[in-house]
Length: 295
Image (tube, rainbow, N blue to C red; front, top):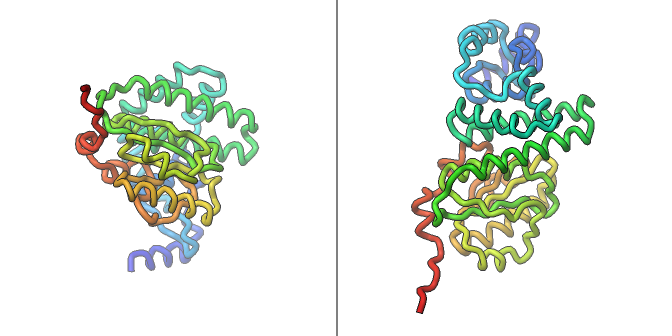
């Protein structure tokens, strides 16, 4: 009933409602942030019959007064802040980018939350490239330097020597690994030791490879460019068969066309879902193979 009313309102009062882009301009934020606030339920919105978000001006003005005047958490931010991140990335200021990551972690409270915010930055970079505001080289420079900064930050997080191990990979035709870089930070914070298989991992004979590895988790990430549902279902099935046979936890992430639900494991739609999807690190640690006793 509530959803029907929302659709009715969006159709009946279309002139009084703003799109995500118009709302972002009014708030001085990015469209990605506006959509996230709406999906989190902190910014009211209605849906059109085509499922597009629409925002009432009164709601936006109230949100600006109550929330943005004293923001509950700092994110990557609006257009000006996006520009500052991009400037540091494109001008090659690695220590400034690292400082921004630590500042963001201090503000939002966890590396999982940082992953959500940095995901907005990556989306914004892609959208600016699509609009012709960034060249291909600039887009590549920004994402590559961001990936390096995430890796350097990850190396500062201490781990137990016997931490459970997580194998990180992308499918065979997937080149993008920023999702894995953000995932690595979130996993280390939760007490897991990431092990990179990395980009373009073939899944043929994956069961044999898994048998040789001491891992308790496999996490596969795919970007929106991995948009062939048939191929993604094939990859998911191969990973599912190998992991289920050995009792290894399996997670699928990113915006790729993974089957949902997958044949085994769990499909994640954001880093905030990780906590409920992972077994406790202490329990996973006990599953690690024990080295043979010396004779």
